[in-house]
Figure 1 (spheres, helix red, strand yellow):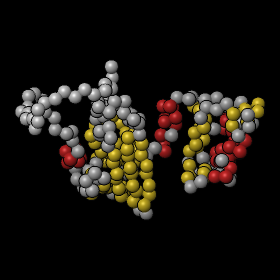
Figure 2 (cartoon, helix red, strand yellow):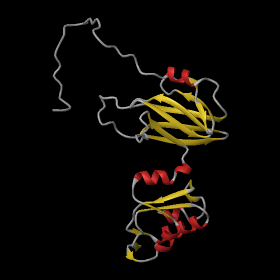
Figure 3 (cartoon, one colour):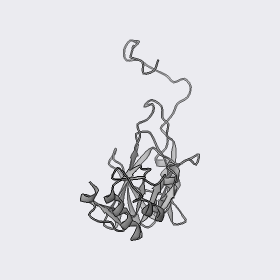
Figure 4 (tube, one colour):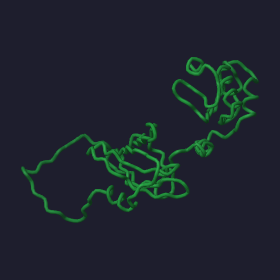
Amino acid sequence: ELPILCPEGGNPLVVGEMHYDAVIVPNLTTIRNTTLERLHAFHKAGGTLIWMGDCPEYVNAEPSDGAKAVYREAKHISDSPMQAVNAVESFRFMDIHRMDGAREDRLVHQLRSDRENQWLFIANGKNPVCHDVEEYGKLRFTLKGEYKLTEYDSLTGEIRPLSAEYKNGNTIFERIWHMHDSLLLNLSKGRSETCAQKANEAHTNPDMFFGDVPVSLEEENMLLLDMAEYA
């Protein structure tokens, strides 16, 4: 429970081993008074507190106005996912967009600090709708700050520099992304020396053949009757 992991509120809000600079409260009907106390202390100490939707009408599952004071003092947004994303824009470290400008919402990432460097791991976070159809394409990654990027390829074991562009204090790189891809990067302060074009050439689409190609069979041809995935 929260009182065990978070004995008292403050900024940042410490919950277990985690430290939070911003807290988004979802659209609730009831809230515990212990949670309210810690949220109030967090906000009073300068933390960013954001409420989605209306103010909870119940505290500890009983009708109460106890949440109204904390609700009024903080920022309010609707329960729209995009409003939640925009509300914490100043805290964002990484942004990922598709080539049509839409924000990529199928990936997850973890960022860890290792002394002066950081490790960034990115992977697919949603099960593909169809495993037989490649839905991904080129993605643009924007990291807040300027970093020298080193890719650790988990498939081949290679360690190679990854080039990037630098604009408005951000590190930007593009990459062809496949549905089961992952990416492990070491981030160190500074700029990559290689040009962005070489990085894109190193990770391109697989060879595709169009038209007739010669085919030879090792054994007599056969018809495989398999269970249909779709009917």
